[in-house]
Length: 333
Ligand code: X2X
Image (cartoon, rainbow, N blue to C red; front, side, top):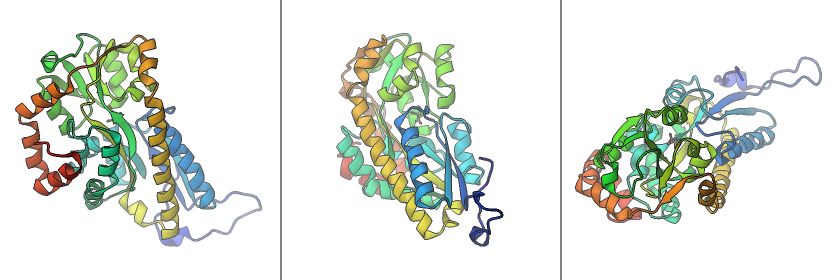
C-alpha cells in the first residue's frame, strides 16, 4: 500500500524477474480513497473495478481502495489528490467545488426532479462542461459519476415541516460554499463539518441535524442519533471519480482505457444498486424508529427563490454554465 505510482515512463518497462514465481510489483500502484462506509455500493463497486483492472492489465495496474475516510477527510483527500500524495479519490461535486468552483452546479437546490434528468445532465453537456473545468485544475475526471442520491433533512430536535422550521436550526453541512449558501438562504444555521465527523457531531449534539440521502443515513447508521426525517429532496448529489493529472498522463493509453472502462462500468452498476436500495430503504429506516415527514417541497424552493439564491448562483457560475444547467433542468432563476 505504501508503494507510489511509478511516474517515469522508463521505469514502467517490464523488470526482469529475479527468481521464479516471485510477483513483479505493479507498474502503477495507486491508492483510491473515499468517504463512504465500506458496505456502501460506492465502495463495493470501486473495489470490484480495482479487481477487474488488475486482471485486465495483467497486474500492471494495482489499485487499493480505502473507504470510510481511512486516508483522511474529504478536505484532506482533495488536497492530497491535488499534490499527488494520493493518486485517486471519489468526491462529491459541491465539495470538489472548493477547488473547482463550477463542480457544484449539479447540486443547485431543487434543480432536478428525478434521476432521468440527473443522468441526462451529468452524462451530457453539463457533465462535459464540469469535466473540462476539473481538467483545467489539474485533475482527471472519469466520464461517469457515481450516485449519492437526493438529500433529505434529519433532526434530533424539532421536526422540519416548513421552511420556517429551519429558522435557526443548527444543521451540519459538508464543507462547501454551495451547501452553506443554500441553508443560510433558508434561514438555518449551517456548520461545515466533514462527513468523517458527522456521526459524533450528531451524537454529542454539536448540531441538531444533517442532510443526506436515505441510503447513506441507513448505511452510516445516522438514524441511531436522529429522530425524524423530512423528505425535502432539496438537492441531488453525486461523486466524481478523480485521478491526479500527472499520474493519469503518465499512464500508457492502453492502461488508461482499461481503468476508464472499468470505473465507468462500476459507476453504472452502482447507480443501479442505489435504485434498488431506494425502493426499500424508507421502510427499513421506519423500522429503525425514524419518523418521516412529507413536507411541501415547493415551499422550500420558493423560499430559496425569494432569498435570491438562484440569482446569486447564476451570477457566480456565469450565464453560459447556467444556460447549460437550465437546458436540462428547465428554468430556475
Ligand atoms: O459529506 C456528506 O454528507 C456526503 C458523504 O454525502 C458527501 O460526500 C457530500
